[in-house]
Length: 163
Image (cartoon, rainbow, N blue to C red):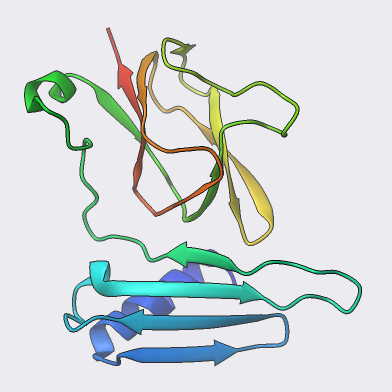
């Protein structure tokens, strides 16, 4: 089952009005729980647990459902401050890593200059590491997500000053 199939399943469950759905397959389990407002995608929580092979141990991965409308900028004391910045958003759900490996430096820091196509982070989704490239050029002014933290589809990751 790939990411798109999981996202479609989440949308279907959210629209169906079901409060909980469990799906077990040979190599993973998916549990989707909704709140009282089943029609709102924000009220859906999904847990994906990889079944460990007989020779390996693996920890379950908790993944939050995609949001219908993610905020354009994080809450800040002054809205005018962030309105001039562009946002790099997550194209997928998964776990964000700011370094290519634990012993390497981070891809970008506050103050780093990025060009279109530069790798800004890696997101692990279903044991695949996806390099996330900047679609804009500018200077990183704020990192909105911690290293090794789960991210949602369309979640803001970095604020970039295009000037």
